[in-house]
Length: 226
Length: 226
Image (tube, rainbow over all chains, first blue to last red; front, side, top):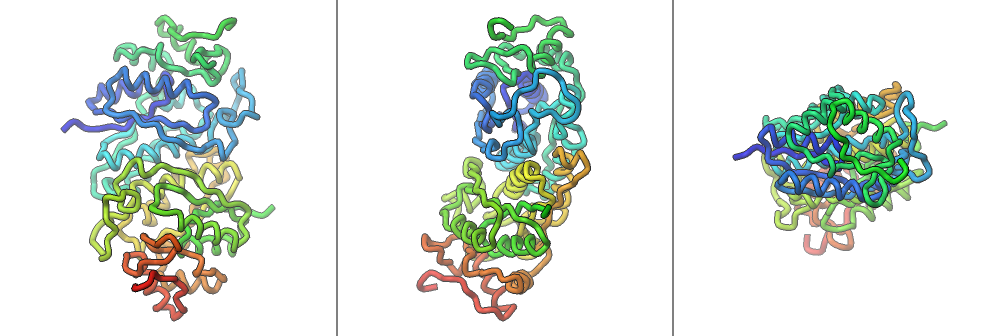
């Protein structure tokens, strides 16, 4: 029987690459996305397109009311998206977001009897996010195997963060080798309703530099005037 | 400033006691409950009554679509509730439930700048649930302090499971000292629409024996004929 993996799929460049790597590692893929109070649904449409494109076994979108907690520029309309890099933990950090996402993935992995959960976190570009660090991923994996029936019965789940110490260029190079269509992905924190990127937010700048560094044409659609 | 705690409140006997202990420890309490595909809402009404009774600062109910994952008698109508004790992990175990609940509590704790999260898990009565064991709680706490801004900045959150190695009688004795009104709580896995207990499920039997052991009158309302 083919081994299974749950893949957290945001619609962005990194998670699309992580999904392709889960497939390349021989997994049947169950993709999971979240509606968590984002400013728009464009990135969920991108996630669905990536999932279709890669032939996943199933793609589920779970509703999470993270906005009720506030505290992040990504879910709180009263906090502006920054257009310049800042020191420390960015205001775009969502409290405990990866922990909530991974907890849902863990529940689904337990029901599916999946061996692995993949996520596209990256500690290089997002060094200010506490829950994108290798020591966090390792601690979640340890907790997960104490939390679940499979873990207790000796069939551990692994938390795979294959991009965690890669540069954006390395991610794009590997994804391109695996045939990822990055035109389908959206990285911008404030894409418009057609999915066009702003070109100025942290995420846009990192993405554009990645394509430039690796010498691949940037397929990103930008808003007019950017 | 008074220190804050998030308390997971199910409407049952254990979490009502944990809430009273959080108050006794000097915390301002933020109570959190979940609508996660339970067979009925009676226990959420009990949670709201307990929260009102104890004067919490706020009580939030978050919607979680755990039923989408299936796999438990508590959320899957095709699995019968057992009326006899069984070896191993019970069918009433919900995959990764405490991990999802604690992840939400962690997000709220981060926004509130709370010092602690209390939950009423118990490893004695529910020894078959992997996520009710002390080693699981310790692993979650370690992960939580790597996951969050406060943890990274050196203000750790503690996961408090004060009932974890207590018998049901010890829990009832302590709660009674603290003035918990157990008539408001519901422990039954299959209470009727008036909140009356079945008297035969695992949870009912443990609760009734607890009141008998400690010599406190059982305030539980039972369904006619039980």
